Image (cartoon, rainbow, N blue to C red):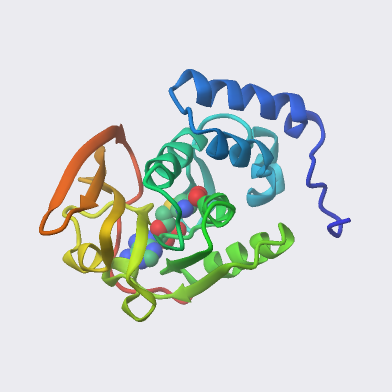
Length: 223
Ligand code: SAH
């Protein structure tokens, strides 16, 4: 038993509602079975406040406080699929931990996840959520992640869940050859979700989707 929380969920968080979400992911083009399995088994309701947990299995972003959101499941699956398809993942860097939902998904598919969040209480909440799920292969850092996490690099993949106006050069520099960076780029009105791959002497870019993430901000906040 995991304390007072019900990991399986009741009512709107029941297995049936979760299967419906999975159907939506498949309809929208997610095909990687490993990713679909992890999306199926990761309880999204534990990442939300109780008042919103009945909406946990809707395919929408939802507020988590501090003016931030939990990502839409389809986008989490899309970003994860984009990095998993490149082969085995030893080290993955995530910028923008938020409540830790995307972190939890990647942690089940990579050896180690390094995650950076600029809002301290959100990082604490993510840590608690992942502990509850028994996910221990995650290292957390409270910092401005636009500079990446150089000491821990270089990475097989980097996922950024907040949008800069331009791709930070530091993130590109921390990618392995063959490594992938998935990042929304643009203003608050909407962004391109880009998949950038490091080749032997250059980078290639593909646009995956049009998305709307919160902006990647500079500096860190304590509360
Ligand atoms: N990954 C989350 C979504 C988080 S929303 C999920 O799965 O639901 C984006 C997060 O990026 C917010 O928590 C925001 O505080 C954080 N963020 C914004 N700018 C940042 C920066 N420069 N460094 C680290 N985190 C940042």
